[in-house]
Structures are given as C-alpha cells and as structure tokens.
Length: 137
Image (cartoon, rainbow, N blue to C red; front, side, top):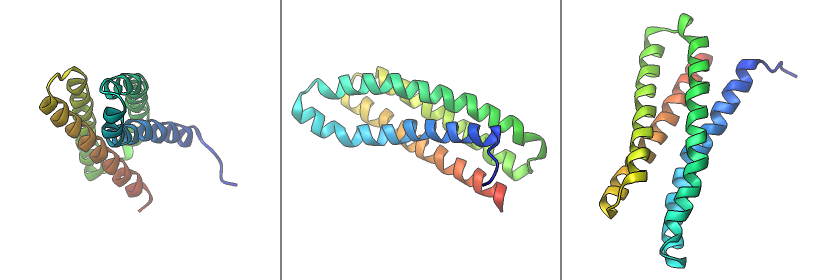
C-alpha cells in the first residue's frame, strides 16, 4: 500500500470541501423548482440551511488551499503559479457571487448571482484539476 502523507490528507479534505461547495450549489439549483412547487418558502429555507454547510466548506477550501499552495509554491513553474493565481481569483469571485446571492431580493438578482457563483465554482474546480494533473505530468 502507498504511504498516506499529511499532504494527501489535506488534499482529500480540500476535495471534500470542494464537493460540498460546488456539488451542493448544483444540487440545490436542480432542486429549487421541485421545492418551489412543494412550498413557496421551501427554496429559501433549504438555501439558508445549505448556506451554513456551504460557507463552512468554503472556509475549509480557503484554509486547505493556502496549505496546499504554500507546500507547492517554491518549486512551482511560472505556468503553475499563473494558473494558481487565476484559480484564487475565481475562488474569490465564487465566494463574492454567493455572498451577493444570499442578499439578493429580486428573481433576476438571485438568478444572476446564483449562476455566477456556480459557474465560477465549477471553473475553480476545473482549474484545481488542471493544477493537480500538472503535478503528475
């Protein structure tokens, strides 16, 4: 069996938090129409409950991302560093869009900020995979 290092544990926690942040947003978006049909107030209640878990996952993502970044930065190529900086910007944009979404009051504001948060979350996930795969190439 291969050894399990602290780095592997940190990357696993990072991936779990990303699963919650990204997958949760997509799942909740898919459930909103059914929740709305069941009870008009249900989407808001579900979103508030998800927000508790999602923001904890986002905080874990940032913390483990910093840990992962600090262990990689010294040996990283300029291309890796550039991709990482773009990812950090996209992660920040996802958090800002989610924050705005939580405060939006119009259907259009909810739709635009929710879509931006989900889109940037998926893009951050993609860039994380690009960075992870680049370590093994």
